[in-house]
Amino acid sequence: MNKTIIALLVITIYSFIMVSPSESKVFMKRDEALNTAFPDAGEIERKEIFLSSDQSQTIESLAYSKNESKLYIIYEAKNGEKTLGYAIIDTHSLRTKTETVMFVINPDGSLRQAEILAFFEPQDYQARENWIELFEGKTLDDTLRVGKDIPNITGATITANSLSQAIRRILAVFKVASDQGQLN
Image (cartoon, rainbow, N blue to C red; front, side, top):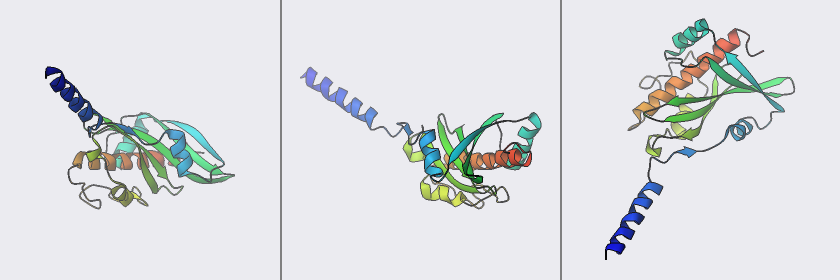
């Protein structure tokens, strides 16, 4: 009888762990994400952008968000001489864990798409695709704030605010790097 109870307990615990909503998930790796975002690119060039303290402060001012990194990798997708767009992959904290998002930016500085590549919080807190699409076509001239022109996500306010801040920060990084000739 004891062996049966122990076996059932082990199976129950194992199934709880394996089906746990806090299971982390990687959806797509960098190269696959870049190729998906830029299927017509003949080349994707990696550019390392090292920010000065002044640039970092400018980013914070434009984004209304803290900038915690002085290094960003910007991928420029080209087809011949034509720039198709740019991508910046950003990993940021949510509650206690992180999410990694690829932000695809049009040459005019507007957001073309945001693609969640990895999410390590419970899946219930992950922003849904239709909510993320609300940011498409937006620029730093738009408010991009949850509760203003972007609705909140019920039950995932931290995720909504964090992703909104990340979008503003990445668009600001792109603007500063572009304005200062770091993308040429």
